[in-house]
Amino acid sequence: MTSSPSSRLPKAELHLHIEGTLEPEMIFALAERNKVPLKYASLDALRAAYQFKDLQSFLDLYYASMVVLRTEQDFAELTAAYFTRAHQQGVVHAEIFFDPQAHTQRGVAFQTVIDGLWSVIRDSETRYGVTSKLIMCFLRDQSAESAMATLESALPYGERLVGVGLDSAERGNPPSKFQAVFDRARANGLKAVAHAGEEGPAAYVWEALRLLKVSRVDHGVRSLEDPTLVAHLRDEKTPLTVCPFSNVRLRVVDKLQDHPLGKMIDAGLMCTVNSDDPAYFGGYVGDNFDGVSKALKLPQATLVTLARNSFEASFIDVTERQRYLKLVDEASHTAFVGASAEPALPNETASQLTPNPA
Ligand code: ADE
Ligand code: ZN
Image (cartoon, rainbow, N blue to C red; front, side, top):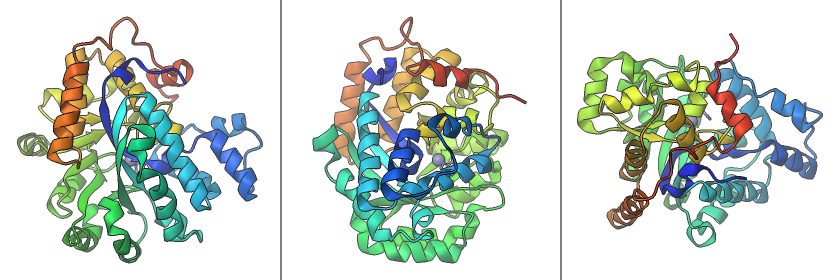
């Protein structure tokens, strides 16, 4: 893999689904190892299916593909592969989502999942130079009872988790559905984040803030539709984990040049840039930085602010935060945008720059 121009900028990744890093090659390798039949005859046939019309069409493929993950070793290898790629793109800290219900409901034990992830997360700093934390997400299109049962099975492993999140199909599944689950998670010392305002309305962002008491909003791009909400997010300095390539691929916006990130920054919002599901959306976090810097003509100073925000918004302690902010300051004196800022993955990334077919 070529390294992206902004790989020289130290950054934290705060919105990354580990299952969304499952690359096509790994899908095929794990399918063979675990004797799981695949619907697609070749890598090309699988890749050809990566055309999404909305969030649900992506989720259908995402859940179908992750059935190849069966053993602790599978989850460990997936996580190790992510750290290798993230490190190459300048990630020095990652707060990683996982979707336990997507595994337990097909017969993989919660312990298998968490032990596999943890075996790599535990020493990601010494092995990959990336500190990391785990955030367990509830699938919002499943019941609140299922989320509560998942939380109960996770609490004995609470030391391995920094927080809980909320993901999957947003429309029709408001944050309010999970208020009791989030209350219990926070009472047990877990931080709260939630996807809101991706496909769902700004009202869901309000609910995530007021009812789930989230520390960050994942996506939140539709917040711009409500000026009172924008003012609130600005005044409270609530971080938004924005995922530009994801928003193009899932048709939240038509093309990268139309992405509202610039408007959000201009409105004073505390934005960060992230990759969401990089194996499906054409690039990792450095590629997202390069893509928006080029498409939105963001100056280097803005990229530095986005990197600083990623540490300000993270769940690391004060000492670690100061150490990372110093790294950003040092890097800000070297050029990492400009003439060399071509997308790192030219073919895939370039497709992010063109409009989706109607
Ligand atoms: N799960 C994985 N990626 C997601 C996204 N972009 N939105 C909601 N749930 C997800
Ligand atoms: Zn996401």
